Image 1: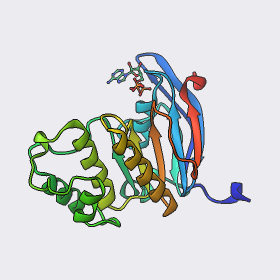
Image 2: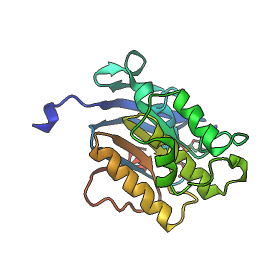
Image 3: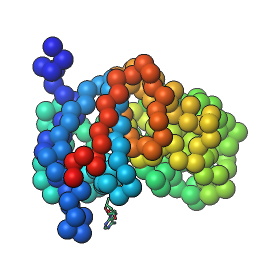
Length: 210
Ligand SMILES: Nc1ncnc2c1ncn2[C@@H]1O[C@H](COP(=O)(O)OP(=O)(O)OP(=O)(O)O)[C@@H](O)[C@H]1O
């Protein structure tokens, strides 16, 4: 009787326009722990805009979002959610280690220590490197390490595979798999096919909302 379980995340009748162009309307979905939602759609269809609304960076034009039955602002949502966007969210003038310590100071600790997370994303040995000296793929790996050292239930990932090599792509898939198997949830956009055969994957095409 899965439909009777309270949805951790419930999006109801969301609508958004930009520059008088309707991106989506009446958009509704529910996401439970252990589930992954893949947002698909052509360039400009509104995927990033929807993620930014889900992160609270931007208001929707209509609709509601609830976290465990509560409006976001009255819930623990913003402590339970972590976002990795196009810009990676790292501080370029700080070292790798300082970035992770900074992230940890603003959040509850996650399952991984900083050393374990750096090992996991294959950045061990880069602790004292300034972020501005890292490659694009290494910066992306650092943003993944940030997810591992801090506590969050919902990962919101905008094009997480960008700049990553084959091993990096497999690494994200492994991390997502681990995360949802331990009670997490993921919403992501990607133009790549996902290789997550053992997970409960929902797909939403934004173009169909127009
Ligand atoms: N800062 C902005 N100001 C005005 N319009 C914007 C802004 N950012 C995006 N848009 C417009 O909103 C629409 C949706 O953009 P969005 O970035 O959400 O699309 P997307 O589906 O993520 O695209 P892509 O696959 O190219 O990343 C586009 O028409 C875009 O031009």
